[in-house]
Length: 341
Image 1: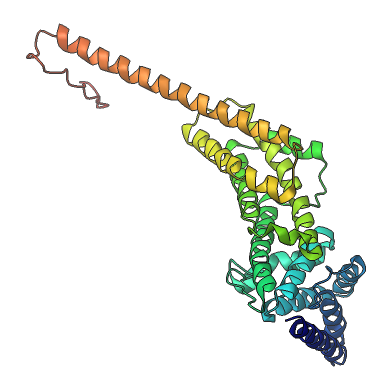
Image 2: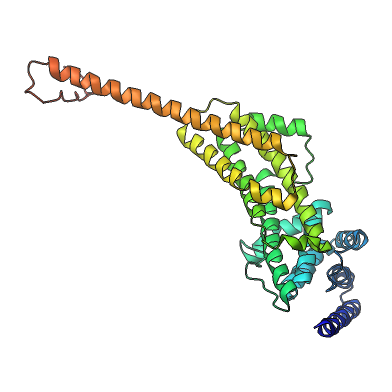
């Protein structure tokens, strides 16, 4: 088995080198340099993730000239969709994630627009499977998970109007905007943020693979997104918790989203090894949920009181009206807006 793995690694290494040479010899010079850097960032070597220098080279060459941003995203997507290797796929996703986190706006814009080419699930990795060996099979589940997280991250960024890890607005400015937002807007964005947390919590059971340096870096980068999302959620939860909400439908939404959020806590603690670091966040979620439940009950009690009072009034009318037969209720008088003559 060891001999077989060595031979396979050698074959993959030679394949990577051949691909780089072929890309370098391409007659389309603006595409050639981009593809060479993308191939160097997404090799079959499992030992380590792409280095910072390799990622930086992709970001620089991808934004160097007018046609390069589109060529860079196309090259990464082509590499992602053509590979059968879980390692290569994971490195493609990791590079794309770095585009979102560190890349210039023109590169991010190309990535954000990409769904128009391939539909809703533009990464199309929900069925990805590399059955080369047991480790590749386990790594495939991380590819599917990571693709889902990255898609959800881009969805959240579109709904918020800015990227999670890069906002030109200060924290105080964002809080001011949140305080001016309607309940409907806060709940709409809260739903998207909770969706990201839920997707993140669907982490594969093979957590032991975090010992793999590539998987470790993937989890670290997702963790940065998760912390940003926590901050966005906390602002909206605290704002909604401080308002006197009268709409039972909105209260149902709020309580439902926060309940879904609480269900993710255990998995997230295991994934990010959070040892009491987020108590403020989870305490705020719990208190706001309890306040929402209490407010719902208060409104429902008022409704019940109105119904009871209305029922008693009808009974009183029946019992004191001498023109009604026993057991007959007083009919509700019809209102007429016709002119009285």
